[in-house]
Image 1 (cartoon, rainbow, N blue to C red):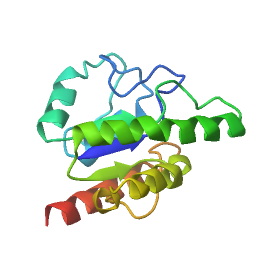
Image 2 (image 1 turned 30 degrees about the vertical axis):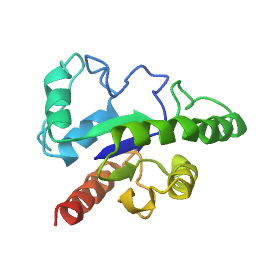
Image 3 (image 1 turned 120 degrees about the vertical axis):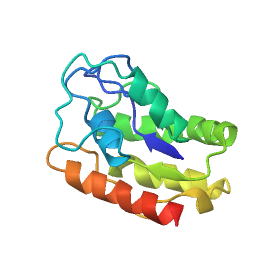
Image 4 (image 1 turned 180 degrees about the vertical axis):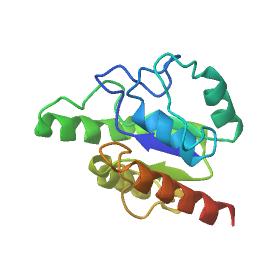
Length: 156
């Protein structure tokens, strides 16, 4: 199962970096949603992510970004253009990884990524039919619930 996110953040709290920074919202809430991190436990700065990433991958889960560089601080127009441009690399990675399901995270990438996937024959692999919220600013519980719902339906 493949998660598709927007881009590495300018904050430096990238999903695949070795250690947590204290602002690892997507990493922390994804690990909670798939049962790899306890819901009530704080994820402090400096935690070694490697064991969690290995368990995430062992479950058949992967995460890629639409853009290979941070776009979260770009002006809106440049950010949209970068996302649209990034869909070609998403299609290439989806073709190479051949996931059995795809979850698109974040509303601003949902339509461009979904459209690109659908036009390339991957429509049947998209597991969320509406955007998932980015898991910060009070949307953490909604993100975890939606991921849980998707995983339950997918496994049924």
